[in-house]
View 1 (cartoon, helix red, strand yellow):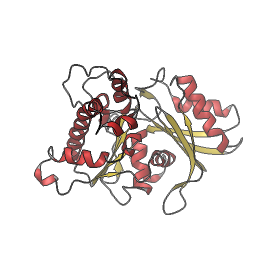
View 2 (cartoon, rainbow, N blue to C red):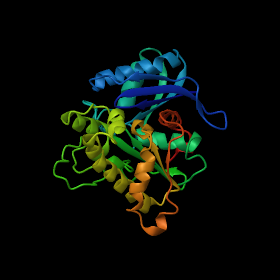
View 3 (spheres, rainbow, N blue to C red):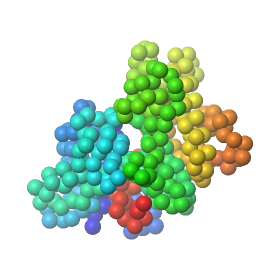
View 4 (cartoon, rainbow, N blue to C red):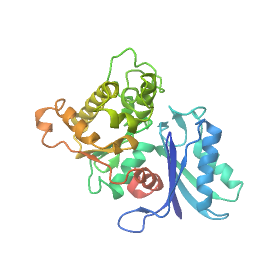
Length: 307
């Protein structure tokens, strides 16, 4: 059966069929398209279906895993909350897509999973966490997510919502009260690309994280904007380290591509760690980048991914 993985992001959607027959899984062919500007249910559903169809054919069964940047129910059938999208909450997205494809003669088994969990599975199968049994993948991008693997198994929690680390409360700042999940003081609102870019626009800075990062050493406004975000990330990562004692914390997502980000975070994290943790703490970058979530999504349903 052909296995297709899809990573639904706030800015782009990446997809591709994945070969699991070699020692390391690999994407056979990949395609990335812009996420529909409206980020609404209808346009997102159509975009996902258009990505699936070129790799399928009428009468041929396929398996499709979709990494969702939000909360998914325990059964992985229904979206609970998609914080940066509209009209998607409560939707049985996989069943909707399956029904649409069935009308075209395509039989597709659709599985949903949090996108950061997919990235964690992908890094474990073929990337920076290969050979590890206890690790965290932190995805830094439009929002902030995490995938946690403990004792070789993906951590899902009692209600399927474990590892929503972007919604850790890291600040008591009353200005941080607009997180899309309905909570306040969250890491995502403190340090994700979307939120930083919104604040940058108000300061007259270019509303693009990459450009803000590049200006940090020469532009005081950029430095002042980034400093509290980096501190919030450092506190969040240190909290994950002392809670889980992972072999490594792996940075993924678009923000992780910023040159020197891991080094700056490592320096800030150390002061928050108890001394016994400092010599064993490892912070590293993803080896797969955006491919990790696609590979992890395609692997959903396989024995290696059972929780």
